[in-house]
Length: 313
Image 1 (cartoon, helix red, strand yellow):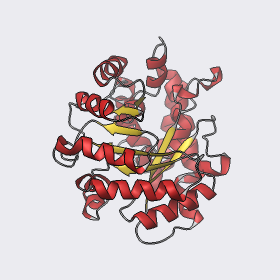
Image 2 (spheres, helix red, strand yellow; image 1 turned 90 degrees about the vertical axis):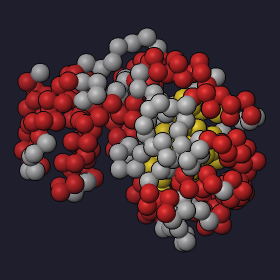
Image 3 (tube, rainbow, N blue to C red; image 1 turned 30 degrees about the vertical axis):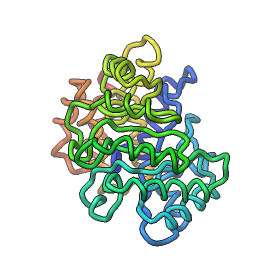
Image 4 (cartoon, helix red, strand yellow; image 1 turned 120 degrees about the vertical axis):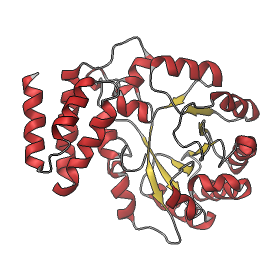
């Protein structure tokens, strides 16, 4: 989730319930993708996207982070995977699902779903380039514009040496439009011998239960659903309520303070507005907060409103 679920939001979301050692109910995080073109990236490029590399590749709450790479040149992506491993990556994930037009125009992300042989070659090159103890995983969609070759693509990832795969149950053409076709994940799971993790359109506990029932998977990956409801993973794992609005405000404050430390003043405003936009799906108060600050451009004014609003609840 480029530009949204970055290391600052990973830090915030994995703090949910941390007082009880629950780390948001999240077992593993996957980073935003690091784009690999035709060069060996410097260490700074990896640290910029995955600063957790300097902390044992874990969030401050202790949740491990797999570093995700995206590219179409097997040799180049393997070289970069080896460098990431040397820097301490917990695992290497390979992106075969990004639907962004600019990414697909350059042959990356979901565009590779047209070339199962190349997918296999990329995974195999990465698997051979990194130490055996470092997991190599992959994420794919059902296809580019049709799920017709979904089984071939999944088989290619397994043949290349992926330890497990995440399947986002839509094609590139589907984008993020509902529904997600979880029944296709079941077909893929039955076809492979490696674990398959279900992803796509999981916004609630009920969605998670239906996804598990239909896909047959015992593991799921959350994306936008966890951004909209930060306690969703904990709610799925055990019977508990979502965060109260005062609890959520504390998270918002932590997130803002983290953004202040790492993001220039001109770019901070969009971050908090973006998250409030997602939270509004679950919290009417977030919509009110968004409406109150959406036209504000002064960072200090937004900060005063955010903290005053929290203190007033």
